[in-house]
Amino acid sequence: MAATQLPLKDKVVIITAAAAGMGKAASFLFAENGAQLVISDVNGDAGNRVANEIRRRGQEAVFVRADVSKIKDAKNCVAMAVKTYGRLDCLFSHAGIATVGSVLDTSEEVWDRIMDVNLKGMYLMSRFSIPEMKKMGKGTIVCTASVDGIVAFPKQAAYNASKGGVIALVKSMALDHAQDNIRVNCICPGVIRAPGGKKWTREDIPYPDMTALHALGRVGSPEEVASVAMFLLSDASSFMTGAIVPVDGGWSAIRMSSYQTKN
Image 1: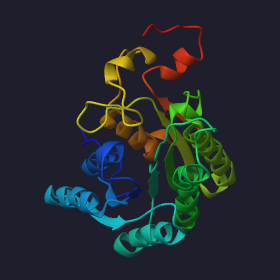
Image 2: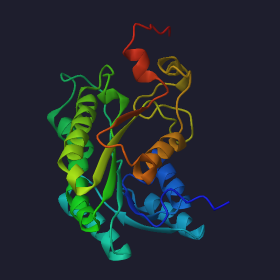
Image 3: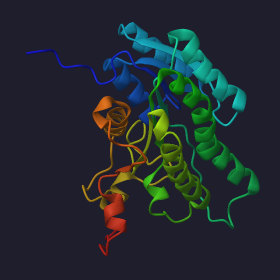
């Protein structure tokens, strides 16, 4: 029996927000499955630790510090992939931040920062990645939105709006670049266990209060999100583009139904 092909074997992949949580889990998973990685994050120390650990395991990774909302940083991140490996095959555009508040509670400064990182960052990373993929004749992009971009969560006006924008951007890029053989898809995580497993990352809410919002009765793990992102980046999903994929344990299914949770 022939050996199973690694899903990302020899693919050059950029991962943004790779120093912690889902991005960190994706970094280790992708490296284990054959990827040649460029990992980026605003946290230089943590990002370098991830890259060093991947290399210690005998796999390939370089780290570049980047704030994806800055055009020079986004351009430099893609340039690092080309300089190091000679090309770019895949982008896992994962960077995002959150805040709590209605439009009345959200300052213009906070609104702009959320949009700059969550939406503009996706645009900038794709803007510089797509030309390199076109040179290769194909490519794949996966952007991280959120289930909150599908069904809004209260008191998160800026975050909900930014993630809804990511979903629309993904659909637009999928249409615009299908003829270039570049596939663009989107994952929408539900509540995912934070580092340490004690608190939800967006608000100081204990996990047991959130489990009833998911049909599976639990929150997700970073590794579960990373595995879906890897599937969408790999050739196994070759007939998928413009797809919006909830990775939410049934959160969106519950919110779209008449099911009433009891807290």
